[in-house]
Length: 213
Image (tube, rainbow, N blue to C red; front, side):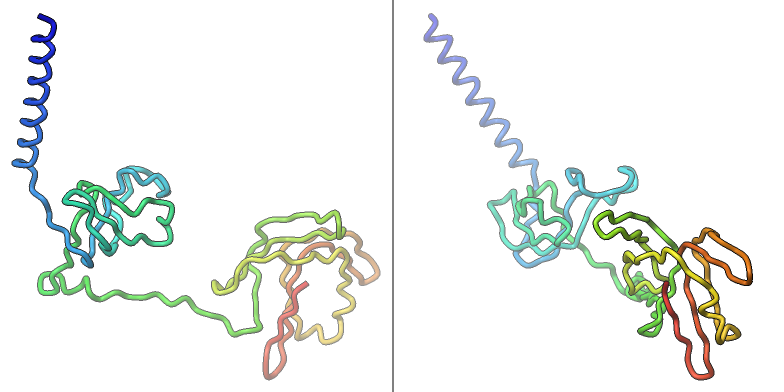
């Protein structure tokens, strides 16, 4: 009696699996990806994309299809940002890339590139102090500054502890002083001693020289 019930249960399970498999293959239409074509990847399982979830793009790409693994998986060539991801993806996470029709959408092919203005080499203008730190080993205080030129990266500069403006009295008519951050330590007798970060720009008839302090 138990053997008959067990055999009947095994037959029922096999029939249900075969029916579900046959039904899936009949209703599922393969997209037919080819090696070398451009595809898009669904960002459903991408956790390294920053920002609000509702504002994320549903697909990322484009990527090149390198190989096919059966009918339901493909291997794509990922970019540097997604190197930690496994290159094999299921077919449900891949979408074929369709380029826009130039006849219907002529403006999509015209991409305007913004080229930021680059200052001449040798001139750097500090716009903001981002961070300050103290180096106990060297007994120096440094400040992380940002330059107006986007090509120049932010860097740490040593802060001058004491500065006497009387040393720059010669040619002061051509001296332009930009004070970013300072504290007055002494004032009297025509002398001013400050502590902070300053930019000195000395203009002449031919050129303009900038001295960082």
